[in-house]
Length: 325
Ligand code: NAD
Ligand code: UDP
Image (cartoon, rainbow, N blue to C red):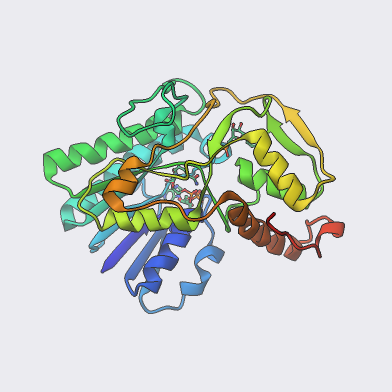
């Protein structure tokens, strides 16, 4: 099949492209390199079935494809809040353009939505039926409401124009290739621990998140795309941890000598988050397979390699081996 991946040079998109290329599909990666990087897709650059197009999805594009995985959108608060109006444009105009493309060429359209559509949830864990508690005017709204509108557009194109859609709601995902300056909690703590800096816990660290390893997520994507379900379907790992527990785990695994430092909690920071994955299990036969510690171990190894190469890993840590206990 000829498959378009928007945001394919990013963290999740590049892992998805690896899977699609390994399955012998023809892949077009569309990216404006806002948070993505060529190094993530370097191994495919000379492959005859791979094509990279530098393009901003807020502008229309004409292509012939069978499936579209639509991931283009900055995912970390630091990046999506840097230019919030652009984040709205990417989610609304960008998704509109990609749905228009899907309609014209009759491609199946897969939307990477998010657990952020549940906002600061009053229902725990969050099932797909829960309609969420989102602040429409806060600093996270450009992303949360942008993704809610992207879902609306997908379902309206489905009802009005018969576009074949798949919608996944992704919960916090981590793994190799996350950006070092991403600002997300897993990357921040690993970078801080490896460079001997204090781990910055926002608030008292009692807020929770559930962390899914990227290969599990990609497996869920492929199952949903090739199923007969439109979704929305939650994909995430139900293992729920407080942020302080995560800090202590990474501290233990990388550098027991670094301190934990408390910082103010950002505005509208959700108190807790855990996916109800009953639907993914029943309808797709999917469940996560990578536990937090082994997932962190692989992620830490990737950060260590990159940081050793650019000389930012703390000297006394560059030779140590991380082991899961
Ligand atoms: P990422 O920032 O690594 O990847 C996003 C990619 O989209 C980047 O390569 C970026 O350059 C590209 N992009 C951004 N705006 C664009 C535009 N206007 N035109 C073209 N390309 C553009 O983020 P990620 O973690 O890989 O997230 C991928 C998708 O998954 C996003 O849609 C995100 O909202 C969703 N998601 C991610 C998580 C997570 O925990 N990582 C959680 C929920 C949802
Ligand atoms: N967080 C933290 N220290 C950091 C970065 C994030 O304590 O250095 C907290 C943040 O306030 C939130 C949680 O970790 O409660 C997850 O943050 P992230 O940005 O990774 O994801 P999101 O809030 O979008 O789920």
